[in-house]
Length: 292
Image 1 (cartoon, rainbow, N blue to C red):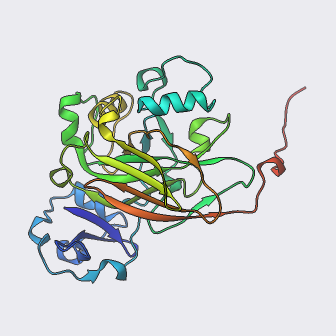
Image 2 (image 1 turned 90 degrees about the vertical axis):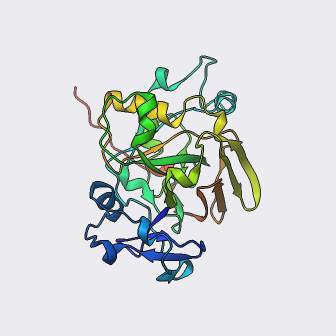
Image 3 (image 1 turned 60 degrees about the horizontal axis):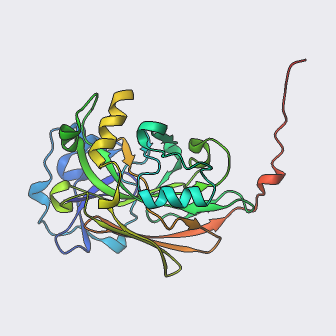
């Protein structure tokens, strides 16, 4: 099934035709402002409505982020070999040392950076490079701690597209990836039975019609389950946490007025606009207070 959060706090599944939404909210008695989390935590079964007639056409509703404020957004760095080479060449990394999840750990993105697939990416500074990164993301469906890789697959509720937008520079990774609108998630969360093998999916990102990133998730260094296993060692993964798995090569800058198209096989597609705030990073005056 393809779950979709829409019109603020309503949960639905995409109809069999692919162009409509079956509203689950009233059918299942969902009341939470995070209806997908409520669904995953409760004793609900939407399968009986998967082939029901659509209540709305997809183009009649506003698709929101699947989870508006996940407890955690956990991101795996440098999980495609060619992107590691690209990062070294671009001086985002200044050493030939192999950087893996085991070396560098994961990083966190602010939940407030999450937006849905129908919102715009907002560039916060007009004098800094802001890059796009398309990634396969997924949602944790049950509380998870110290799970083995083989068992981790069962903790994944469904898969989604995630755009990890990044300011380039020397700041801490979580800082420069956590600005408002820098985590675009959606449009759907697709259950594993419809996705097939998550480690064999084509993914692509284009800016203004120019393809910049094109790869297959088989190129990942660490699988989705590996990332869950590693993350669960350090922290309990809660229902609704979003995990993202790194980006392939082809990362490039975004500018005001750009249109970003992203697609992952069996997961979905999104088209997102880009707008710019008239703020210069160089003009931000932060007063320092020290001790004598």
